[in-house]
Image (cartoon, rainbow, N blue to C red; front, side):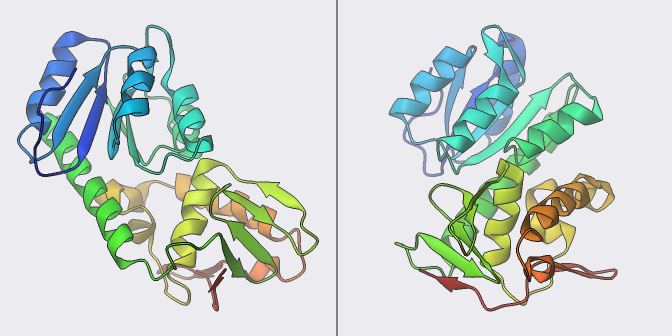
Length: 244
């Protein structure tokens, strides 16, 4: 269902089975110059995304025909690189970590303040657009080479010196993708997850994700030094990074 056709901004898809909440979210997001689509089932979400370029997906986890976390994982494994905000009544830390691991950019728990959702959507869209505009990587780059590894930018996986493949979670790929665009630059939690705003500095899930990523990188000699901790500041990937 198209709510705001032909507006100047990006396209936002709201996936929520409760029609009252869906209308509330759409009404709030309509305050920005974005085109809006809405859906109440996973089947409807997939149909819209097959026919319409979607810049940001607001995704409820509990849809009547499936789980939003599964959809998030499928979208990321299929190459979807738009932004995803999960909105759910499930407040368990495990659900939040799983959502982020499987590719969500942000996680908002019901009940929420509609203006907070609007602010997070605005920040995410800004990050997506800025990344596209400022990235120094060649448009046709397939790999980013750093240390002993290559990052396959299309298949979203690590390739070792002997062509051994290491699969990455959506969260791990997203972190590496940001590091390779900023070699030798110390990045705080806020810079690694700018869409999370002030709350990310208190959320240690990113430290867990980086720890898991480091374990995979350390599987090759020299890989343990790919991502370094800078005390009280954040993390850095010492260069160089070569795009191929």
